[in-house]
Structures are given as C-alpha cells and as structure tokens.
Length: 198
Image (cartoon, rainbow, N blue to C red; front, side):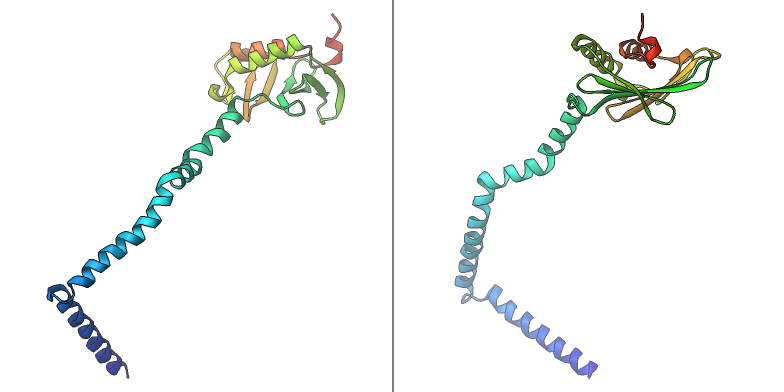
C-alpha cells in the first residue's frame, strides 16, 4: 500500500508539473496571468490602503515606542501621590544600638517606627520642609548612587542608614555617607520624638 501511495503521489506530482509547464509557455494562459496580476493587485490594494493610511502607523507606534516611554517617564519623574511613600529611611547603631525608621509620605506626613515596625509617633512636614526634602532627594539621584557606599573612615558607635526612594535602595555608614545623602538626612524630621524638642 505504501508503494502504491508513493506511485500515486509521484503521478499526481507529475500531472501538476505538467499542468504548470504549459501554462508558463503556452499562449492560452496569458489571459490567466493577466487576470492573476489584477487579482493580486486588487487584493493587495484594499488590504494595503486602509492599514497604510490611518491604521498602520498608529498601531505600530503605541505598541512599540509610545507605551514604554509614557510608562517609564511618569514612574521616574512623577511626584508620589499623597498616600504613597516618598522616602523610607532606617537608622541603626549608635551608642545604644537602637533601630529607628522614618516613613515620609508624599503629602509630608511621616511616621516613626521602632525595631519591630510598630508606630512610635507621627507628624507632618511644613510645605517648605517637604519641598526641601523633595529637592534633596532629586539631587541625590538615587539611580546613580552605589547600593552600598564605602570608602569612608570607620566611626565607632556611629549610625548606619538604609534609604528607599523611587524604587532604589541605598545603604551607607555614617563615615562613608555621600554628601547628597547627608543633605537628605538633614531634610528629614527627627528619628525620635526626643529629638523634636530644640
């Protein structure tokens, strides 16, 4: 049966080739060629013209270039919403070896947390203080800072800090703190309520 199928396939192939041969050389098939070309151009015409005009360009741009750039730029440069976290800073060490965390929201409200992330106090920055903090954070350029700052002198009983801002996390000891992060620390509210009093 397999041999029979192979023979039948070969015969059919030969018939198809034979049918194609005369159509290429014979004159009777000239009209079909001419009609085939209009058919192709006619089918290509309707299908090409609608997408090429208004349809083709817009879908290609939103799919590739438009959608990534709007999503990337607002995330990178936009200000956080009032309820979103603007910056989170954890300070550990010092003479007493304590851990304190500050969480500042986009509206300037902040919460102090202890080592177990329990709230120990709240407050709110003034408009000018919030502007100063935002400026310090922007100028620090967290995307370009090393994840762990090193190279400074060791300060015994000094503090270590972990900053989280704009999707970036940066850590630094008191002795290796970049100047830009020092400005961020200066713009933050006190880590403890005891430091609130002048």
